Image 1 (cartoon, rainbow, N blue to C red):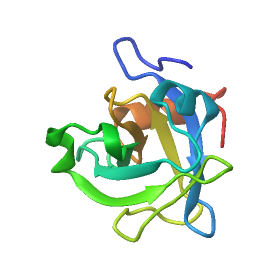
Image 2: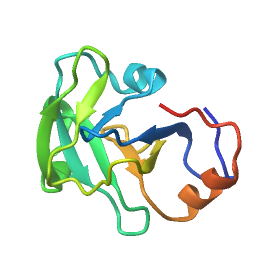
Image 3: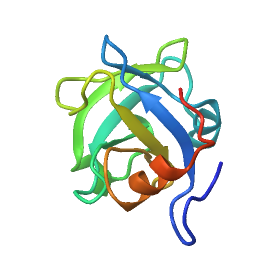
Length: 126
């Protein structure tokens, strides 16, 4: 898992929003965040500077993050998550998967780290 800039976020790679509005969670992220098949997850708003959203286990989110919840969902058997309508993401678009807080995994759609990742050639695509 590379850190693209000194002092920047660590990233897992890219996910592509599939035709059915699903994404695949990177295996390393599932291990680090304790995601398992069948887990109920919460989608949270991200910052304006990085866009996108976060995903955290619904049973582990602190009250502070509960105020930012957009929707809920589940992880399926293939580590796939279907994006609800409340989450803005276009089919075919790439999202940068970054270590967020210890509570939520980040899926970035813009910003400094996103731009650095575009220049980085060796990131996995899920």
